[in-house]
Image 1 (cartoon, rainbow, N blue to C red):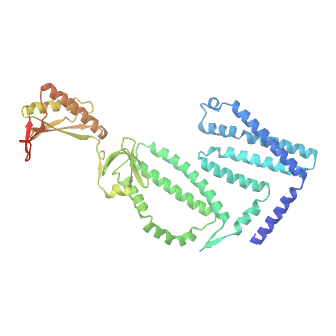
Image 2: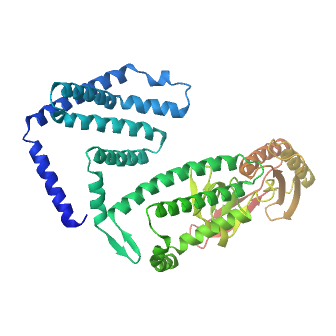
Image 3: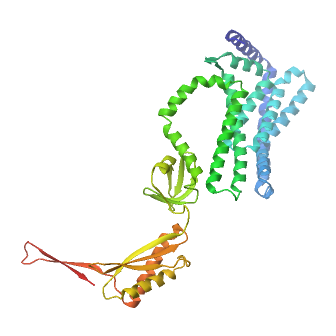
Length: 436
């Protein structure tokens, strides 16, 4: 169908519709449709108010609960379809069948919408449900009124040729619908594979994430390729865009590609994995997720740092749990010279050993490190099983150590400074005294 034929078809269709408006039976059928719609709305509201879905579907599988909820929500459409079908049946027996064609069309459209809503109830994504439902109903409506072939020919009559690729509105619509369906099925399949991979105890977390990403990417490429082939687009015809895509990757997408490749490297070499406690620059936390472009590091205070994968490859990363989660904690403190250093070390070791989170199989140690001007300096070291317990355990040890020093009369030195002004004028003589 060329453009001239399309215009002729639109003109004839407009004339046919205009002729229908002059028939009194047209307005009579419209009145019956409005009456059926009003009665269906009231009946649907009354039925929904009397049915308690929460108590009735409790314990049912999730797909059945969702399907029943969609059925109850579509009860008005079902009542409308039944009422209009009955009105059409009465009209056929009372007068000529040609005087009830609008009722037949209304009943078919209502039945088509009801079937489409029930079929799409298995889809959980509201946006996809809306797109698929409206698209399917439009196709069904055009088929019911007998204009589907004409509309398809009109959409296929306008085209744009790019190299060896012919693009028409019909091809674009088909490709969009097929891509939505294919990607939806791909998401279902990838979720199923992901659940199987995550339940495998033989795979490390990093290998699990790598396999999941590879499966998702492979299924997505397969879905796009299948959709393009289904609408008749030859993949070799897309070669005309390869140069532009290469330039785009080289200039605008180089960071995205670098992060993607870096993510694959991180998953393959297992230098970091979900659950590791890491420090990257000034950011510290536990890795909660590894994505294609970035990793998510949970700081533990509600914040999450999104760090590009490239930074983990090019910058210094401290992984506290790379080979062993056991972490050494160091506590530096000092005492005055009146204290016995051997007693101080003994108290510090006993205090760390009795702390609940300190490891028992790795005994703590205390060293005298310096005879300073202000007093003696010590270094207490002990081990914890989880790096996330470092700060908490260190605080507990320091509190217990303070209590032990108070009990034994051991004092912690601190500097005392005095300013003396003679004669009320400068220069000022400053003296520093340190009490031990």
